[in-house]
Length: 457
Image 1 (cartoon, rainbow, N blue to C red):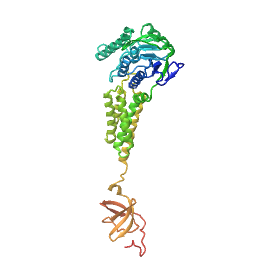
Image 2 (image 1 turned 30 degrees about the vertical axis):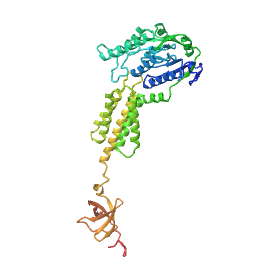
Image 3 (image 1 turned 120 degrees about the vertical axis):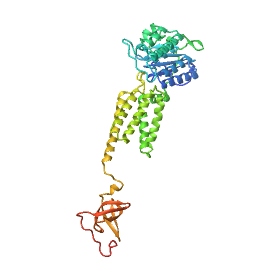
Image 4 (image 1 turned 180 degrees about the vertical axis):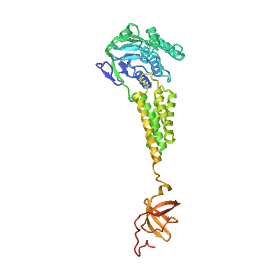
């Protein structure tokens, strides 16, 4: 991700940092990874002694906790921060509006927008969606009588109003953005004193804010930004890794892989690979879930679904437990994350696919169980009954025969004829390690050994 002003010379180090502008870029939903990236970027800018931090922003909103972390860092930053909604067509919706108000300089590119800051759930799990307000730019105001929603809205309105007063911006419109979810274009925001600058690119931004005074935690500070060099600091591997792990779809898949791997390992111990992969996937899933707004009742529903699916494979419930498990998995995945928070939800196609895969696994397991139940027994005494063999040796009153490729001691039935070497016999019973046999009906006459043959008795 590159800043809008590619024509400005860019550096990527601390060389001559006192005359550098640190450029950070956020182009996704605000979450734990975004907060970590911004906080680390502000710390580096302070260490390098940068003259200014420019936060290029394009976000649909995000989690309340992550947004407040960023806002607190912006307010406490000893380095001035200019939040710049860019490029054209970008937006600073919901959580992005709070960040814009918290910055020392609020700037936007033409054809951008901000607003729609009503705190729908604000990252809190289990909150119901609010109906859209006709003609609004997002979620509508909370219904009367909803005490929890009213508390959240009042808290958010007071929060953004305080940010507006901190930097001398339009506090009335800020409160309307929270209570009525209104939005503004860049030109309208400048006219309403919501932002300070409308800049076409980074060079224009630095030129327009040069000489402005901003209110810092330590007092007034005059900006000198003309002809400063750029220190572009794109998201590093840590931010990218956190963004990937904290993806709701990946977290859900890791949870499924982890539980399935452990179930397979416990049912067929000795392989090691399913258990190892399952344990790693489950730990990664738990790490991702603690970063996201999780509905723990939905998580319990998913675990119940796994338990029902496992029970279906060992209990003859005729599919009742399996169907219940699939339904519990789908419902739990649907409710696991707050779908009103931007980009924080498991896609419906993924839920359907995982549920169908679970149903297929249950059907396949049930079919295998039925086939094994009707299949002939291949071990134990019942397996030997009716098996054919050949008499190999006679030792006095003892006879030995080959049955199923094994050498067995055999004896004729009480009323049956005597046995002879080479005679084909069929097992009729078993007593311990001795088989009771009788000659096969219609079998050819046994081969009589010649004189001197050790088998002849």
